[in-house]
Image 1 (tube, rainbow, N blue to C red):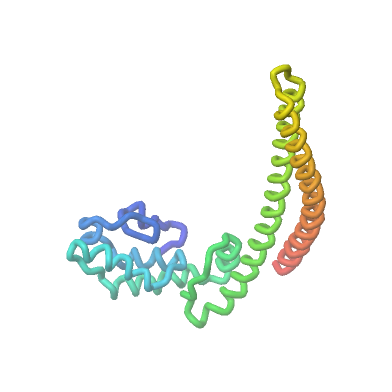
Image 2 (tube, rainbow, N blue to C red):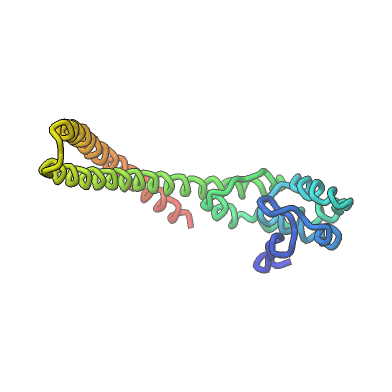
Length: 208
């Protein structure tokens, strides 16, 4: 069975993780070997049959466990290829210890390498997101300060309101400065994260 011709079980009515409950017709007509194969190619545990058993029990139907297991065993042979390990790790997906002993060591080695790249890229994205969030906060403060300045000179603004505005301006002005300090620290953190990522990418490239 070609690994390039997978059909999502959801698309053909099967109840995989995250899909809705199986209908009676799906339970009755399911090709359990194919369901097992596709679960295997996606790195799902053979224990996933339990979700089908529960869903189909509502319709008085029991999955063909033997066929499912046979298909799953074929599917994990595709999933557990060493060349797939890096891609799975880099996707951020978890590994459910489905690989047989003769394939697991090589798969896990590549999986961990891919997972490390995923983590480094995620760390850099996280720093970028925090920097962007701080810049947005500063922009919001500037807009509020502009509004306060306009209100301060408005003829209908009371003395009490002006006092409150002065206090508010001082508070958010301090926060603006704190955000500036945070941005500088984050930019230093970003430089380190980017350097670590680039070094790792070069190290990975050198192994191919």
